[in-house]
Image 1 (spheres, rainbow, N blue to C red):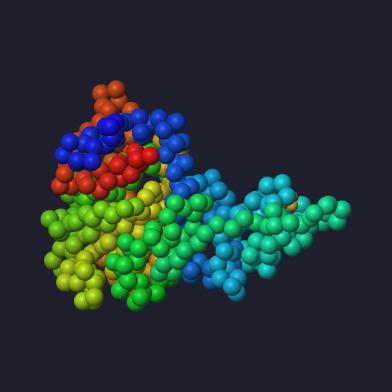
Image 2 (tube, helix red, strand yellow; image 1 turned 180 degrees about the horizontal axis):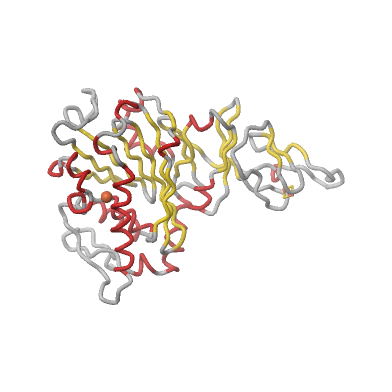
Length: 356
Ligand code: FES
Ligand SMILES: [Fe+2]
């Protein structure tokens, strides 16, 4: 049997070869995998203002232009590509009753069904189902809406590790988008270096002095599951933590943050104040966009504890992920080794990435 690139035994394994972070053809192959995964689309509260939202971040991740619409019947994720000659139907969030292509005026209803088209009276066998906008699957959890081009798992299977563990939280909490917490970071690094860094708390004492003071480093835990990683930060003495009911396996723990990562680039950071959704968008082999969206459940908890100053933590992380890309291009470096105690999340990600 051929030896796996990343050994299943972390004690023997070597990290990803540097070409996986720096070679353009490997980059293209890896990002094609974004099409078989679920992605965060919007939160339900985003649809209070608009009934139609182009999902431009998913287009950047998968090259598939999509549109989320809200009707009386529920939510649809539609192709944002006009069935006439391929123009994008909507470029901005909007609130109309019909979708009209700005190129030659073809219209669709919010379920994506073809309605009208000027100068097409003589066209034979028209319209047909081919003239409707294609539909993509959707799933919802805790008010968050997810979609994907062709997800390989059912939504329930994909979300289950989170929905089971966090049901006590999802059942109790109402979230509101706080746009003042939105960020759009452009980072000179490879997307997988950004994910690597997210998946270990090993660097916290070295890179994040303030965060280190509010977390109990000795009790930081990493759990692996199929499709992702959960890291749990425990509050230091006097720092805020969740009130967790007895029904949860986490009852009795002073949890300051649940850091959920779902392959390949979705992070749901759940704090006592709410959720910071981080979306990793690979722009190029050496350029990554990271979108932050903040949803608040308990405003009185803002500004405190592990999720207190996310900008500072982010900028500290960017220093190391940009530095690693420069280092990784060196002729002196190819692969490293993992700490079995501290880098199980990174190893798990690399196993997923290198698996066919
Ligand atoms: S491309 Fe949309 S109407 Fe022509
Ligand atoms: Fe960090």
